[in-house]
Image 1 (cartoon, rainbow, N blue to C red):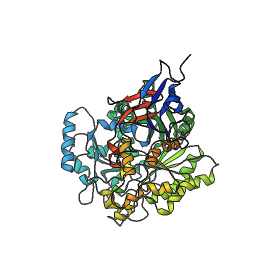
Image 2: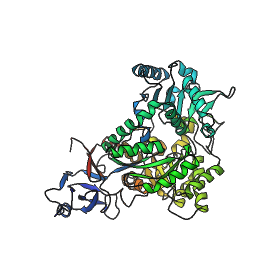
Image 3: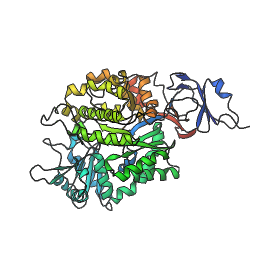
Image 4: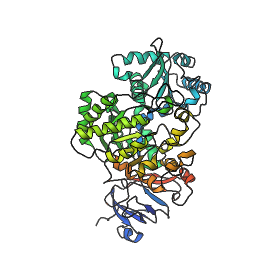
Length: 534
């Protein structure tokens, strides 16, 4: 007679994220599902000689982490020049020239990760002529750490101008132009347009898509990530995902967006029809929208002017009326909408559009989302719960770093009220946490630390409990993809996705959470990662 359990975990401190049974000692798995959660005695009864036995040795066990906003489709950038540690344009130039010399066959030179403080001079970005001083014999593009600004030399800009002809929707803030001559300066805004352009212009990038996706999905289990919400994708990327799955390399479950910014009516209908093809490994049904940019480059739509430039409060990519119409159309087709908004005015436009769509379309479980929510008006915070809107946020973004552009552009008072996790939680909003990789490290544990140990400035009042932070990285992530019935907590009947940590987060100082190691990751009842320490 076959065993009732193909795998059991025993001797664990299992934090289930299940309010009805918060803690347990052991887990029994049959194939890819959890069949029992309870004591060692209860679970061991279900095993036989063929059952795989995992001894957690008293360690903390959590549901698999769900990264609710990650750019796995951009993993090809791992093959670009790395500019994160470059503190000046001189340092950037040195790294780029060295990279170009090492890759003489690449038709385009690309780098990413630079910080605003490193490149800004006299309040402006370097233009294409400045970039020509680094590389002039082939196109070059270097992208900021946040992905929202790209700097191109003259050859790249010439290619961009040619490619953008006849595609007016890509002029929505994408190419910065000289106010006197109307000539493109070589400064590009908006990542969806920029990456679309780069991918079209560079065969090198398209050829690296599969290698990049294969690489990143091998990294995810090392950090205990068992599911991801890909935040910016298209049909071409979807085919790469499917190919990776066929070869056995899809080592985490994926909720894949459809990027509205690139759409046609025919594509939109096609994407709507594909929703029914979802399963537990590749799920579809969410449309990605942008209403603004980021405060660092004055592209986030703010209610009040920027602190370092009172002449602007940023521009929304669409008028409120246009955005209402777009969201109402997508909502009526059955899409969940996820809208990028960092500015408080952008957040308000998104909330208004979601409310507008709900008033005009048939009642249903919508669960629309706003991504980032870095700043939000206090009067808009209660609307998240009222409208059932998920706040998909990245705690690690709130950690002050060496780049001072966020505080410089917003000012200390707005910064102190930014990233209002606790206020949103106390108002009844659903928080879904994530990394926003490849902008920052994909490891969820530093993100949990940031959310729990927020101790910088007056914003410390927005810290959340450890239980809430874990929930936001697990069960709430499942809720954000309509999958809380099958994952996100350790419960009988759910998918066997869980992790074992090297230390108990509930017993250490919050400031040490980011240093904790994932010793083992199980996805669908199978070992996906095992550290030598277990």
